[in-house]
Length: 266
Image (cartoon, rainbow, N blue to C red):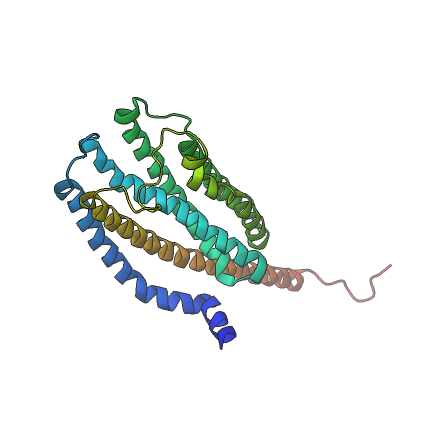
């Protein structure tokens, strides 16, 4: 039973059917939650007693940071699926996730810099957390560039999967950098032993924004996977059509070539 379910889920045609039905609902729900979250952020959440109104950047910065790390984690799982099980959708999921994860990581770095200027007096410091997030963005960019370099999809899938697994070493560094080194970046304040240090009036809207961003990321990922599957189908059809035309041209040239007269030879 599990084998049959596995093969069914691995079929791109089945994925296109259920994702086509699910994506409009996910898109609508994420838009609704995002609208609610932005309303709470700008009109309900009180200013921080130390940071003032600049604390509102947190409601974009934290969800973006979470998704930047989350999508690389998803790519790591997909890389294992590509190398070990050769799941047909693993490479598709990994390729679709890379630009989305890179975009959220870039948003995290930009909003973090805007937040750091009034808090630290500078847009950038070579802090352990900031530097490891910058390294994550560079890894994303390297993976995307490598995909565009290798023409053969199978060779590209294996090379990218290996590179992704090597880059996954950076994920625990991002997570525990504020604990391992003395940094300007604040330590974990949501998921920590002893409970969150954020006041409920700020915590619940933040969790709502994290949920909204997560649903948005999932929606974008499903759309990107569908696009990648269709792109690969178009590529296969284009190659087959080119081969058919080449074969037809070769046959036509043979038929049109002048025949040697009878009796003429060496």
